[in-house]
Length: 275
Image (cartoon, rainbow, N blue to C red; front, side, top):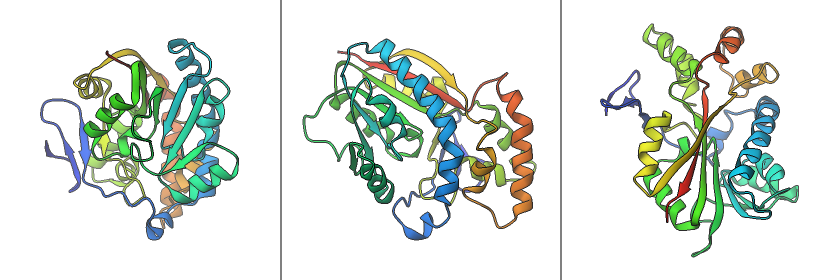
C-alpha cells in the first residue's frame, strides 16, 4: 500500500484496491449524533427497495429452491429481510443496537450483534448476503473464511458494495486532488459511525474471495442513486454549511444521468462456495 489523498487514505501499488484507517464507532452516541436517521431513511428507502427486489430475484435464479436458508449481514432497517422472507428462510444480523431493536419491533427476525459472533457454532446457510456492509469490515479475510464455514457446500455468497471504478467516486478523487476534499471524505463516510474501510473493484474483490475457495458465478451493477431521496442523502450527515451541501446536491444531480452511461458506483458479485 502507498499513501493516498488524505492521511487516512491508502491505495495498492499493484491493483485498484484502496483502504482507510478510519475507526468504526457504531454504538457511540457522539458518532451517532452526526446522522439524522430520519433523513437517512428517507434518502435510501426507495433506491434500496428497488435494488433489493432485483437482488432477491437474481438470487432466486441461482438458488431456486423455496425456503432456502439465508442470512443478511448488517441488515439495518430490515428492508432486504422483508423482501427476502417471501421466498427464503432468512434472518438478519445488525450491530447497531438501536436500529436492530427498531427492526425487531416490526416483527423481523433480526439478531443484534456482529458476524459471525451472532451465529451459533455449526450454523449453516444456503445464502449469505452483505448489502453495503463488506466495505465497513476491518478484517475482510477473516469474514470470508467465516462465510465459508457457515455456508453449505455449493452455498452462495453475495457481496453488494461500492465500486472503486464508479463515476461518483472517480469524480470525488479528481476534485480532491484539486484541493476540494469534501466529496471524497463523504464517499468514505469520514466521522460517521461506520466509515468505509475498503474500496474494491470487481477484479480486486474477486482476487480476495477466490483465495478462500469461492468461484465467481455472476457480476452485475445496480443504480447507486436516484433523484428521489438525493437531497436527503446529502443532508442525513449535514455539514455546517448548508450552501456547500446544496452545491454537492446540484453536482450529484448533474452527474446522475452520466453515471448511467458508465460504471456504476454499486457492484454486486455472486460467489459459489467450492466444495
